Length: 448
Ligand SMILES: Cc1cc2nc3c(=O)[nH]c(=O)nc-3n(C[C@H](O)[C@H](O)[C@H](O)COP(=O)(O)OP(=O)(O)OC[C@H]3O[C@@H](n4cnc5c(N)ncnc54)[C@H](O)[C@@H]3O)c2cc1C
Ligand SMILES: NC(=O)c1ccc[n+]([C@@H]2O[C@H](COP(=O)([O-])OP(=O)(O)OC[C@H]3O[C@@H](n4cnc5c(N)ncnc54)[C@H](OP(=O)(O)O)[C@@H]3O)[C@@H](O)[C@H]2O)c1
Image (cartoon, rainbow, N blue to C red):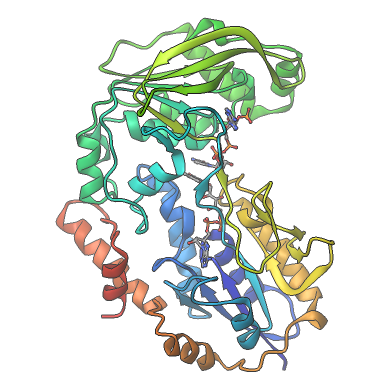
């Protein structure tokens, strides 16, 4: 029987679901899968995006663990496509590749002052509190008043992590340096700015309810922001999620919360247009908007300045270009048609596929990457005649190749050692897990 040697680059949910689905798919060939990740750990944003105080969602890791632990997929962590592996290397060893490299950096927000000290990308802060090994250990939390730009779930995560009292995070998997950083925070007020109205926010109902119920924090909304136009009515009619979100916000408007030492202010119809300060953030200038009847917003003449010492830009994530892989630099995705990678002229690039956030952009929940994978896998199977013909398809060849380049890859057994160490450290500090965060130490533990 013919065999598909498949490389999957990116061990986030998209790469893991794609690997699992092709194993389970109806097919007339055998499959052998190698799953690569630049990190010495699997799980992508489930580990380095999902907030530490969301253990239920972090629990998705258990299902992903079962897929990888079944023994049908080989994991190669600490291997970066573009540095340790090139497209030619993959062609030498595999019949095809699926890129599932997701998104790790912030989308750009082009407003004056965005580059000032004290203006941060949300992704960088997330990477700090989720202890991503490639990000600085220190985070400045000296600001008392902070602005968060954006009305998506990442804005809520960031706001919650900023405003929550550190005792309520102590039992999570955050490592000691993150806990210490949060304990030193001077924060009193977080102002979240959305450019459209309450019926246009992208918060999920559950995440919003959680944000409005943080222990010891007063959530505040403002009457003048509660405007509904024809576009809002349409949105309210068509989306149950919008109805629940608006009901939640209206409930807060009707019944203000008691005063507290920390406050979370939700502002709508407010577009930040300049971050103020000479060499460090001192404030933010916001232009008031009005709804345009079609779900959009237009600027008014009114501007308001808020005194803040830090700004977090939570206006979306953005995918990174991979060497030799056609990329759409406007939307930050690999050029593809339903997961088949295509060049600038729209011609299919044989043997190369994409799935997950790098296929369709940084929007959607973990579960959505399953639907991506179903589509991509179906095309990969249909395209059998276009697969590469590798010179070195044996499973040991890629191991030899990585060894010859002195790439210290982390195997599944290696990850299990890191996992045990995190659980052991967690037990010592009274939590379920304490994350490892030093890449060298992680690789050493994995290969010990
Ligand atoms: C802050 C944040 C919080 C979130 N919280 C939730 C939540 O609570 N619930 C929910 O359902 N969804 C949540 N999401 C969305 C969810 O994380 C995504 O839907 C999902 O992770 C996308 O999966 P992916 O596999 O496409 O990408 P990713 O999860 O980003 O995985 C991509 C993987 O590819 C690897 N990689 C990248 N480049 C290379 C390379 N060159 N070589 C090798 N490997 C590479 C990365 O290291 C990473 O492991 C959140 C997203 C963010 C940003
Ligand atoms: N707990 C969870 O379930 C969870 C947690 C985190 C993330 N996620 C998911 O991960 C995905 C990404 O989340 P996200 O929050 O990064 O993206 P998102 O949902 O797309 O939200 C981005 C926000 O930024 C705003 N924005 C964009 N450009 C702006 C600008 N120039 N000025 C002002 N505001 C601007 C958007 O406003 P407009 O709407 O007006 O464009 C929107 O409110 C989402 O699907 C999210 O649901 C889920």
